[in-house]
Length: 294
Image (cartoon, rainbow, N blue to C red; front, side, top):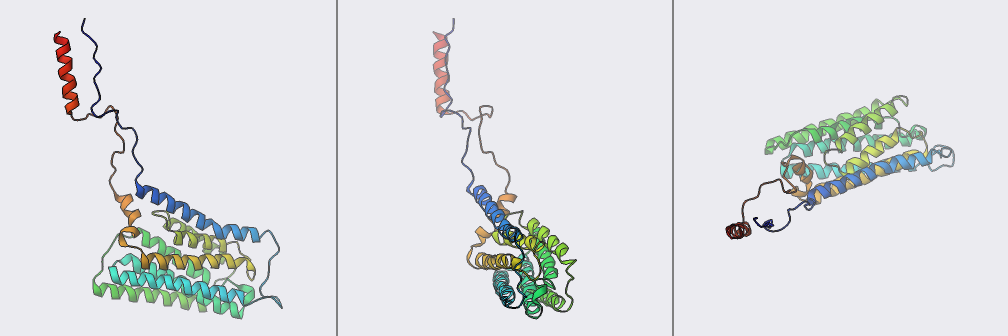
């Protein structure tokens, strides 16, 4: 009877687990941060709606809070737009000018809203801000869908002029063609949906904050303190965009796009996968032949 010989498996047991790709863990972390940021403003507005509205337009009320909040948020979002323009001029990417147009449009709407809030505190934040939010949401979504296009020096100047024209058009519309209060919530909801869709492929905290702010503005009561949390979220979003576009490296900025476009690679080896023979396998076969010969 031939003896039974247990052959070793080369370098040991087959690998059944592999370390998680750090890029994947980074995408998961950013997705959680974006989701948490998007929920801040709607949750705060929902809590404020549990109480009677704190009107900002009644005699003795601090009517200056609305214009100040809108103007401050507009400055922060404008800084984010300027950072996108600087990054676009430096790297020559069309997507940065689209983002600059989106943030510049929102900054223009906030500026127009601040002027209108000073004249009509009871209607704040209605007026031209919902229209600016719709254009902002559309441009943010467009920036995530268009392919990577490198511009020449002349193309960068043309893109900058085009972004400025879009911003000026929205500013004029927000000042002279205000939106009625009945239509404003629908426009805010549409802007929130497009901004949320823009944050799905490679989540960003700034985009998540804007999506949450737009969603919260669908439920605010005009002339009340409810509009302050969404404006605060827009302010933080502008700071996040300015920080990201001015300080991060290009490799980090596009880490999400790279992980989505990377080909799938095997992360585990099983016993069913054929492995090349090793020296240990040759030695085991030699011993088996000698035992069979005896």
